[in-house]
Length: 166
Image (cartoon, rainbow, N blue to C red; front, top):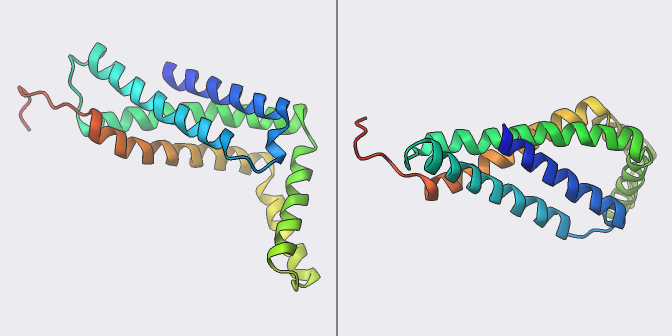
């Protein structure tokens, strides 16, 4: 949980800096890369710390997978709470801007779309941007990414105890 809290705070700092610099409206890949590298680094660090400091230098693949996924789950919960505060109090116009960008993207990709279909698409987008859905999807999405990264990372950091019999 501690490493998840550190990761969550790190992701919040990145998100807030992106907001302060006005990069969220640009289509920059840098914030996404920073988030992913931070997440991968936190998983590697936390699994190795558990393996080397608390588990006698050994860790199974499943233990590593569980720890890595748990770290990102806790970070995702913290980041989801921050996101709720961000869109509710810090930058309430953020969701309106997302709707406008979505409308532009829909019209760009399908200029012949009917008004009914456009309204339906924007209505679905608006429903998914409600705080309860944003929080749920943020936690699920972050946890899934943590699980995916942990699947790969666990392969490299596992170290089976030679005295352990299966």
